[in-house]
Amino acid sequence: MSWFKGIEFAHPAFFWLFLSIPLMVGWYIWKQQQLQGNLNVPTIRGFAVAKKSMLPKFRHFAIVMRSLAVAALVVALARPQSSLSWQDSTTEGIDIIIASDISGSMLAEDFKPNRLEAGKNIAIDFIKGRPDDRIGLVIFSGESFTQCPLTIDHSVLINLFADIRNGMITDGTAIGMGLATAVNRLKGSPVKSKVVILLTDGSNNAGSIPPLTAAEIAKQFGVRVYTVGLGTKGFAPYPVQTPMGVQYQRMPVDIDEGTLSKIASITGGQYFRATNNETLKNIYTQIDKLEKAKIDVTQYRRKTEMFMPWAILALALLSLEFLLRNTLFKGALT
Image (cartoon, rainbow, N blue to C red; front, side, top):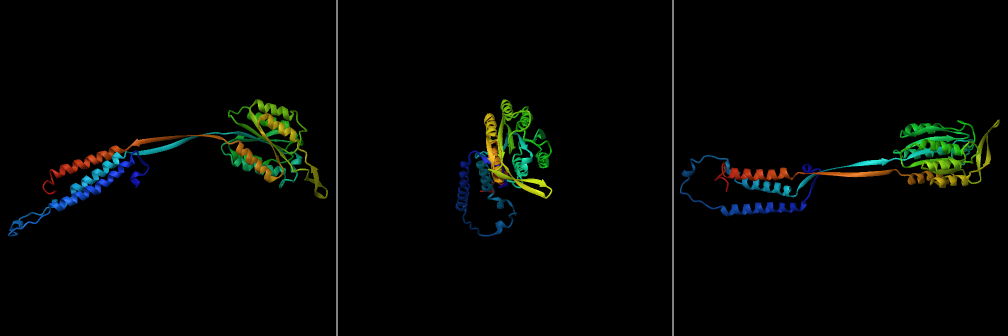
């Protein structure tokens, strides 16, 4: 019933008292039958002057009013309460910087279409799955710079991510510089969880900051680093532009896994090796599970007693029945 929408009852057991209503009505009917009798009169002249009255038609008025009063009283005893509930959710987001290698070797095609594009596409899917986090982007090759600072506007971040390409900066692999730039973006963050996801396919051969020094700096600022080595085992096809068009050369895959593992260990992160698109996607999935935002949910509940209107209705019905029975319908209702 729409009357009781959003209503709870503190003592629903009182609804068993509804069974008393048909018992009361049954007793009333039995009593009325006992009061019936026959009247013999010698003539109908005595009825000739009787005035028509509507009052006898209301002879069952008393039991109707009494039944409604009992029903209202039962509802009042069950203590109807309006229940209003709501919750406050507090999300403690995580600040994440993705530091991506864009050196020439990232064009190798052991990933499809190549390491750089695969890394971009999978990272974009990762970003879309974390709407509550601030995420930024640092790119590095022979040097490093911030492509996008920490932002909650992920549409802007995704557009800037899609625009990165090899050749934007001097070639090389400055892992230490890339990590240091990422840490610099996170060091002033007020959040408790600060994370760098560093992707590279080579060894540090450029920049003024050694990778392990950058890792120690990250540790000092409470930044956790997940390192990802990109590249298949052995050799990978690498496109080379020649006068005859694009030719492919087999390049040895040279990832400094020892250094990447140490960076992760120093900062409390983890090292992963991605050998193809699928393993890279799985790595992002693992990081996503490891770095879930903390959500505090506080539930509130407010109840308002609503028995009083029903009690007043029961009293009003009983009072009205008593008043009419002893005034207007006196003698007509028996």
